Amino acid sequence: MFRPRNARAYADPRSQVHFEDAREFFARGRRRYDVVLSEPSNPWVSGVASLFTHEFYRGVKRSLKPGGLLVQWVHSYEISDALLAEMIAALLQEFPDSEIYTTNSLDLVILAPTSQLQAPNNAPWRSPELAAELRRVGLASAVDLAVRRIGGPAVLRTYVRLQKAPPHSDFFPTVSLFAPLQRFRGVHADLLQRLAADGMPLLPVLDCRPIRSPTPTISPSNFTPMLNRQQAAWAAERFSGRGPGQPRGEGLTRLVDALRLQRQPGSPLDADALLIYAANLAQAVLAHLPAADQQALWDPVAWRRAQPNLPPGVVEQLTLYDAVARQDWPVVDKSAERLLNGALDHAPPSLKEQVLVLGMLAGLAQHQPDAVLSREVRWGSLVPPGTLADARRFLSAWEDGREPVCVGRPATP
Figure 1: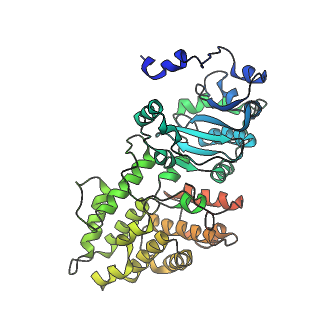
Figure 2: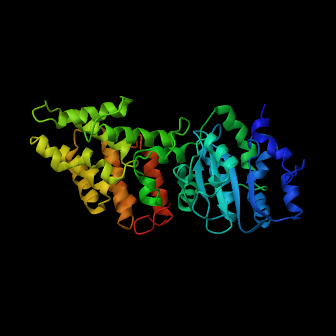
Figure 3: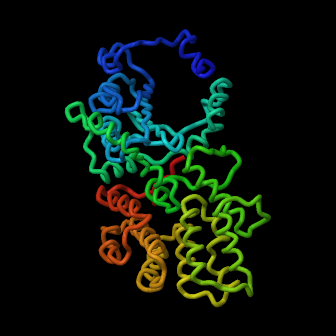
C-alpha cells in the first residue's frame, strides 16, 4: 500500500536498512552523518521513550558531522505539555539552537543543528522528483516551509521554563512512566500551536516571526490551524472595504461586514457591539496581517470621519489596535493604560484581558524591567485569567528568562 511513497528506501542503492536498536547503532560510532532524522513510534510504546532522552541526543550529536542536523519528530496528541516539554528540554541540552515547526494540527518537527541553523532556501525544489513529493504534502516553495515555523530557541526555552520541565533522562524516565496515562486521558499538548495561531502577536514581537501579506505563493492548507487562521485573516482583509469582496466565508467576514456597516455615515451606532466586533477581529488578525493590510480596519481618523460620535472608549480601542499593527509600542503602552484605568469599565473581561496582554507585550518591546510582572500586579486582580491565560503565563516565563525581544533584531526569513 505504501510502496509508491517509500519505494526508494528499499530500491535506492544508497539506502541500507539496519534492523537493530537505534541507540546501540549510534553508540558504536562507525559513521558520522550530515543529517539524522528521528521518527520513532510514540513514547508510550514500551522502550520508545528512551529515544527522547538527553543520553540519546548526546549520542546522536556525536554521530553528526560539524554543521550537521538532527530532525526530530514529536507529536502533540495524547500527551501533555509537561511531558512534551521534558523531551524538548532533553534535546535543548545538546542542541540549544533548535527551532520548531508545525506539520499539521497534531505533529511537530524540531530542526536541531549542531551550529546555527541555515534559513530555508529553494534548493530542494530544483530536484523534479523531490519537488513533486514536496508539493504533494503542501510545500510548493521555501515560503511554505517558513510559514510553518512556530519559533526558535527562545520560544522553546520559554516553553520548557513555563512547564518547569526537567530534561528527560534514562535515569528519570518520566515519559516512559506517564505517557500511557496521558494517552488514556486523551490530553493534547497544543500550547505552542495555540500561541502561533492566536491573533495576539506574541511570537512576531518576541521571536521575529514574520507577518506576511496575502500571496498566492503560499499554498493553502486544510490540516494546519496556524495556516488556517492566517488565511482567515487574509480573507477578513479582503472584506475590509478596500475593494470588491470574494465569496463569503466564515465568521471573520461577518465581523468585518459589521465593522464596515458601522463605518457608513448615518448608520445606527451600537457602541457596545462595536467594541466586541473590534476585539474579536483584532484577536484574529493582529498577528497575521502586516500593518499596511490592517490600515483599513483600524485607522482612527477614518473612523472618526465616518462616525463623529464614536464614544471615547471605542476610539481608544481602535487607537490601540492601530498602534499594535504599526508596532508603535509607546502608543500601545499609553493606550492600554488608559483603557484599563477606566475606559473599559463596562466591557467584558475577555476584552480587558486582551488589552492587558497587549500592554504586557508593549512593556517587553520597550525593554522595561519587570514589564509583565508590574502589569499583573497593577491590573491582574481586575482582569481574571480567561482565554488568554496561557499567553499571560508565557509572557511571564519569557520575562523570567530575560529572553531577548525581536525589536531591534533582524527578522527570521
